[in-house]
Length: 120
Figure 1: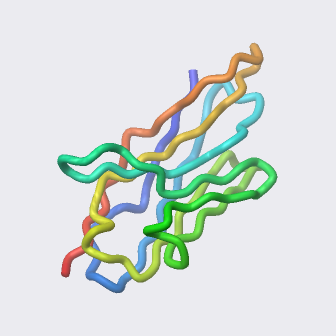
Figure 2: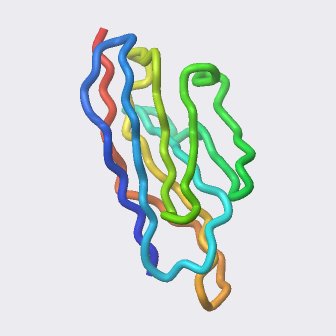
Figure 3: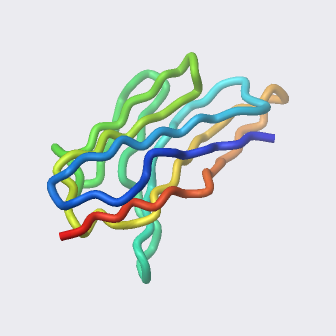
């Protein structure tokens, strides 16, 4: 089995910064794409940013220029540096990873989520 564990959420004032971290562990042969999604109350889960194993990235338009995704392949970790936070960034943030296991099956895994609250 594969586990994803997020950390780093919390309460911050508008304009502030937070850094989210996520570590993947378990039956991991390799990890292709890692990413961050978020879900605000009453809204669908949406992509925030994702990064491939080679380093290419994609960002939601709403966070471009404010958020930066990075990863440490050796540690199976992905990070999300969030700057200039806005109240509309308030959501539960979920880590996601496409993992190839040692049996070479590829599955999509999710963390349990971490709350980010931005006060105005």
